[in-house]
Image 1 (cartoon, helix red, strand yellow):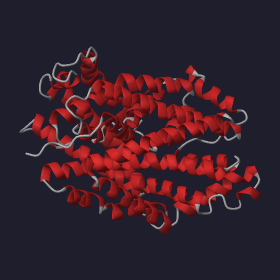
Image 2 (cartoon, rainbow, N blue to C red):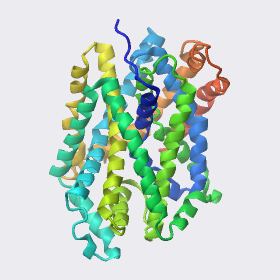
Image 3 (cartoon, one colour):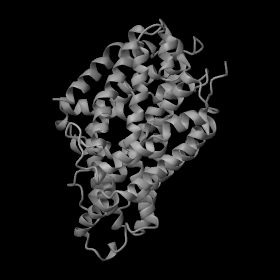
Image 4 (cartoon, one colour):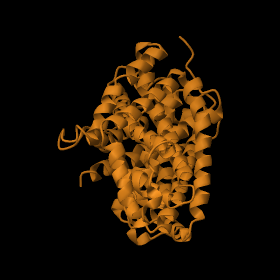
Length: 455
């Protein structure tokens, strides 16, 4: 039996795991939740939820992955042989693949905007347009770039092709090498844009909103939103953390790794807030909803258009998004690839091609949901929105719930403690608390989040 592939360095391990957690959701979901739910009050609540709930559940996935040393299906077959628990792993493989179908499209939009900023027409003629007309101008450009059939298909295909190249390189020469370059680049760009945003007129008002809590807006629904954002921002329930932790060396300190990943994920969220809120406040755009594609592809380009060197800041921002999108898509696709390699003993090349080639068709269907297939709907939803809703609202919470139940009640006795202490070689004073959260607290909260999606 060949030795299980491992990450080559601690830095690479952290970079890859952080890269899997930091995605476009950190950019366009977090600001919307913060704006609607009390600014810093939501931020503080989100941070508490990440550390109190997200980290223990992350540790459960880490322990499952490294303890089983296999893909998301294989870990259940090894740790619970002769049972049906492997079906949880199967759903954990299906979920990221369905996410990849539409996530590639959004990543393609990001690549298209990066290209249009540098070489295309994104800012063509903008200098002659009065500031009050900019929003309509960029809304029209978004319609031209996203809601036409051909160009989004081309950029989606390019994103898939880049993913194939990276994934063919394997864990060390592909995923780890990409993460070692992209993660430092992401934080450098974030830092530069924070400095620019804070230098804008009236930026302090945006910072004040972001960092001054309004606890009167905290309601049970806001708490649920913070809990959901905490799980979403750490890639809980996607099979990614199980897959990546199966590549962790035996001496990896799982508790320290989980805390570092959580802190860096929160740092990205805070830095995005320090970019977005001062900028939109400075230009009087804070009354616009800071969410979804509108924030990324209309509101922020409108902000950049009013800055000196608009193309420079816009290109840096979309490069930042592109980095986040690429590290996310690679990690999402690695889950089914690892399953094919482990379960069916296929070569890396065959596994990559089997997983990735159908995406040229499946992602195209999602892309065309905004143009020629806009009227084609299933259960009242376009293909894109159906996959988004099905994975985010149903599959992710179900997988996270099943993982917590398994690790809390059905996994081999002592597995979690063994993994957190590296078989007794480390002290882990938080292990009993983590076990308590995984057994009792996390399942209850995930059920509440799941139910709240329908009421």
